[in-house]
Amino acid sequence: MQYNTQREQLVMPEYGRGIQMMVDMAIQIKDREERQRCACTIVKIMSGLLPSTTSKEDQEHRLWNHLARIAHYKLDIDFPVNIVPREEVQAHPAPLPYPMKSIKRRHYGYLVEQALDYAKTLEDEEQRRLITECIANQMKQDLFIWNRDSMDNTLVAQDIERYSDGKLSLDIDEFSFEAVGESPLQHSECGKKRKKKK
Image 1 (cartoon, rainbow, N blue to C red):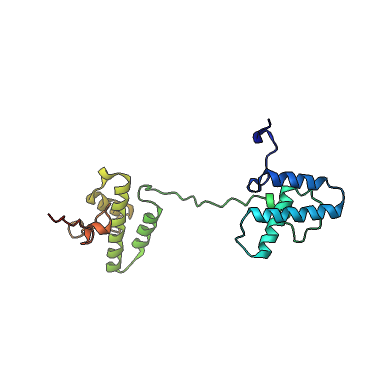
Image 2: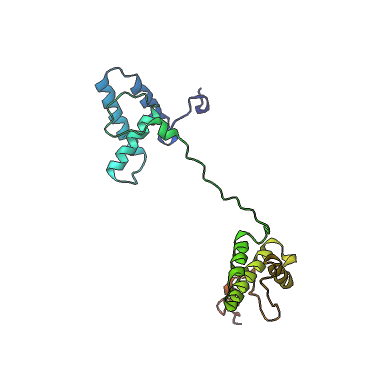
């Protein structure tokens, strides 16, 4: 008995070993016309195995390209569509550049740093105060996520002043932080549990 693990690895497993064997046999056919007819038959069988999700022309183009790949581009026939070259199929895309940024305060993140830098440049006092309060709420939320033990209003105010070089400040006596770690539904009427009637 021969196991599939001992056989040659399938190029496209979704079509199964039967299609692979048919293609291997088609490559061995010496008569070109018979080889062409055999390839057309194989493509018809392949179209029945995988459901079509595109137009008829796209489906036909895809199947003939799959046939060429399964045959390791050794099938000498007149392909009715343009076949994508082997080099283009096997080419790997270039790696995407990952933005490596130096983050001084990793628990607050890069966006908080950017927001603090932007807030320092604002000349309008009211606008600077509103943005500082938004940043403070975000910083407290970040502390809640990273370490709940260090989640302190005074710490947030100190960090804002320290990281903005004293240009921004937060008066915790006048400012009330938003609730963290809770969904908005928990504060609404619809989020409250209804009492069961006895």
